[in-house]
Length: 361
Ligand SMILES: Cc1cc2nc3c(=O)[nH]c(=O)nc-3n(C[C@H](O)[C@H](O)[C@H](O)COP(=O)(O)OP(=O)(O)OC[C@H]3O[C@@H](n4cnc5c(N)ncnc54)[C@H](O)[C@@H]3O)c2cc1C
Image 1 (spheres, rainbow, N blue to C red):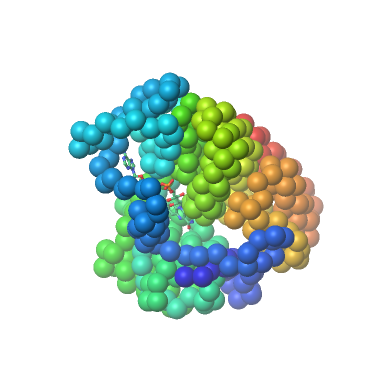
Image 2: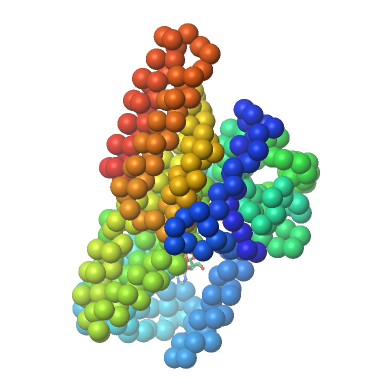
């Protein structure tokens, strides 16, 4: 489904108008995205790949690979086949066995349990993806079919169920539909974690998509980053004119900056939108103020979220602006000056810690 993004801040001001974030506000970007179920996207891509000249699709799983730095990689599959490859692209997801086989280490973030459910809708703003901020953690809602809206709770309990606050933060009729689906045990939950690999290639092996790193799904950057990886691969292999090892080095270099920006964006956004406590609440309010008041700021944010904008410096600048709005919001509150000063000091210190962690990632 064609889809833009909308943030719906339902709390503390449940009656407030939504903030429309449009890809069209990002300079040089298309105005719409697309929302599809993962399985539909994967099936369509595989079918298309299989129809390309010179492509053979094999359904067996890859069980091992060696010789990444040699004249060709030896690949073994679950049906016992042995293949020789000049180039091996590891697009085998976050748990990539090929990444492990090549000895590329990866730092893992803390596990986060999420739950998803399909309901009918309608969505309040059809044609947009929705981010609902009124509960304990953001809830995403996207139309993925004529009568199917995917609702994703970005935090849920150990029992795999969303919190009551998160369900009731949803606009009508989604809240009632989700409550019905929860009662009927129609939820599916999964545990996700961020992952940052030490490098993006080794010899003839290229990491692409989640095998080359992933972040908190609230950023919804995964598929855009996969597509950008495909383009980076095409450029690197094309420019190296058959020298795969040179292409491998170039790919790793070109991927470093956008990966760093994405790896920093994940926790910054997840904590800003979902962390408890007065500092995170002030930062959230600052982000909402910023988006409401600054068209270019909205464009810059959506540029980062669509991975159209890969520069770390832009992320840092935007984060500082959000902090400025958060501080201004705290300063304008009707609370004793000592309380406001204390919150401002804690806000600066917690955001500095968060930013330092993002920089180290
Ligand atoms: C809950 C959740 C919500 C998300 N929401 C969004 C969103 O809204 N927007 C967005 O852009 N991204 C989202 N993402 C991220 C997105 O799903 C991923 O970034 C994307 O699917 C990564 O694609 P991939 O091809 O790299 O890996 P995957 O989609 O994981 O595909 C890997 C494939 O490799 C196959 N495979 C694995 N091992 C082997 C083997 N040994 N041999 C052969 N095949 C193998 C697997 O079967 C699978 O088909 C979300 C992720 C999660 C977990």
